[in-house]
Length: 325
Ligand code: TXA
Ligand code: MG
Image (cartoon, rainbow, N blue to C red; front, side, top):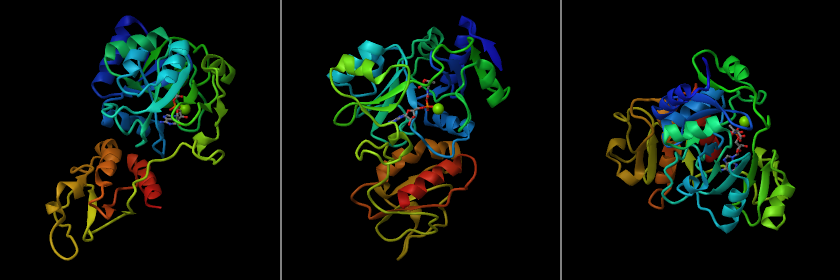
């Protein structure tokens, strides 16, 4: 449903986001589909709503550099560029802080995080009222046009989605994405903040790596790497080998360990259940942190139980298949 972005409506949208739901909102670039970045199950809903068959990392939106520094590790260069262009259409990729509270699903398991302080007053108010960072991809279905008007967003997602309407967006192009985690700064996506603008502030060269985003190898090391565990993954497992860990989904009541014993008695370093009740939102929210937890030197591999290939299960299986390859 379309709602004119009055103060009251912004508070309503903030309430929806705080309580784990989705709401669309305007930024100066395009409309975003927002969720509470701290709640994995809320972030999972975004992938389902967008019909994205893959878990791509998402941008977390904040109200200031100070807030951003709670989650990302900024060096002098990152601070300098943030001070020059925030609030504005620039997304910075920085390392996640050690105790970063933003859901690992928002980073798709990577050790880095995308952060942006938008300049649109409605976006800033919404983040402030929600009191949490808001993760938001562009509010379009996967593979369709950028959402520059509220009507387009409402049309794409149907009447159930709360859309804060504030006319057409000013920039109309997604934000520039700058990766600061490599040797030198690299531009991963072109936007209104130009390479030259960034070079002028940083007084150094910025490489262009816009193909890295799509994983088309160009300059190795700058690729958007997908997280994969360092030990082998075995999919659709119906039992557990000696020395293997189990990444379970649903009940493990009848699952055995080869050579004797039951999966339910595995030690904590070798057992995680994505969702005991078989809830795919919960499973998506837990996926990366549980893979990280089981990817330890005590386990020789990870057996993963079958996950239904429907809804969010498609994205979960996509990532598991790539991790297993
Ligand atoms: O203008 C925008 O950026 C809009 C508004 C809503 O803020 N958002 C947007 O989000 O365009 P999305 O999800 O459509 O695009 C996010 C981009 C993707 O190209 C993604 O690969 C990249 O940011 N990205 C996110 N996290 C990353 C990371 N950790 N490393 C590299 N790239 C990352
Ligand atoms: Mg997009």
